[in-house]
Image (cartoon, rainbow, N blue to C red; front, side, top):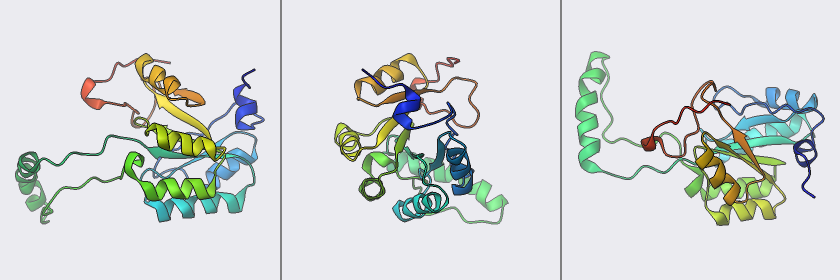
Length: 198
């Protein structure tokens, strides 16, 4: 028999706090978890050291289950001509602000799909729940987290994405409708947003 979501996540209340990168704090996550819901932090906008610190900060405030969210976007592929075109386009905007453009463009956030250091942090810290946004990691990463006893969630913005989440063996789908605030967790932004509501 499959356990219900409250049992699976060890919650008293059917509330999952959104893991908002740059906004969610350890104190907020601990307060939600302490009240019987699932508090969440996002480590998608940080590196492994920041992730380790964020998890430890929540643990200092609560012994209840909480969620750690990671970004699983497709890593950028180098394209020198495209990068040069963007830098040329941006140069006057930098100049208007009295700033110099960077010599090269870089990704702002490293994707969990190729962040071995963040995987190690999660396997060592073993938070009760890990959630994925903007896609899914490979089967090896999923299995490693499951083998560590971690419950896995993944956001999906369409039926096709939800089917991918289910096929990957993720424990629960977080249905993110068009009405969601902030960024949408599209797996493939180049395909466009189906704008499905929840």
